[in-house]
Length: 265
Image 1 (cartoon, rainbow, N blue to C red):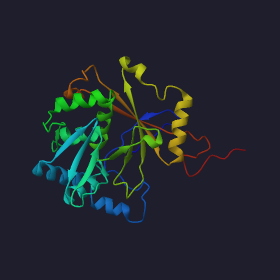
Image 2 (cartoon, helix red, strand yellow):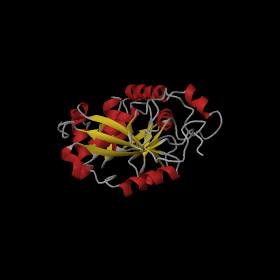
Image 3 (cartoon, rainbow, N blue to C red):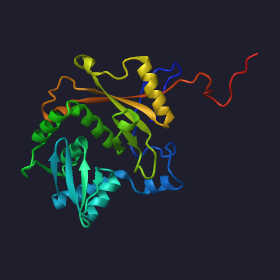
Image 4 (cartoon, rainbow, N blue to C red):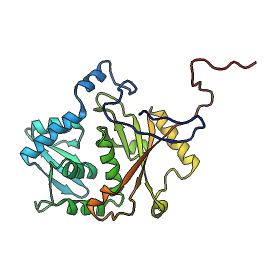
């Protein structure tokens, strides 16, 4: 269902849905782009990428908390169409390199089960080894990955949101067709995580985030991630994680909620 807010201005639960929800509300970059997106569902393109990677047994090499993958022309097109990774400029003409974020790397390795990840010695890593490696470089990796997988699982295109002061931005389809709908901030939920939630702890902070989102025509989406007592050192822990979505917007008192307002004497 569409994100909503009650008339007192309080934040209410919402579900941002999947690609099958209406495409009319998004800001498409040109006329007819919504039709192009509807005829080319992101879920189907991701399946093509998954099949190609599975059959080719492509490998990605870890470099810190990112991974590098060499792609031929077919794979490069699919990576670009699905918005996985960022292309790196090199002198090679027939081969292209893509840099995958830690969340993209684990998602393609574990969720899609289509990418083999190797260390600097060329040794393939298990899901547990990869999880622990990425968690070592980024303490918040478990919560970031759970949120990334949560949105990707609903067929949203997820990219870094640093330029908007957010963790991610979510697009309804490819960024070349549509502007992002949401700026996503991730907060850890649970008594043991209160000290780690430094953002949105005060009303000035909330208003600042909302103002930034409003200035770039985006909606602030907050994802609360709860470990539910699971051990984040194990890659299987995310099966016990839960994610709750909250949309925060400004309440405009003068805005009429119906076509006809009551007239006052």
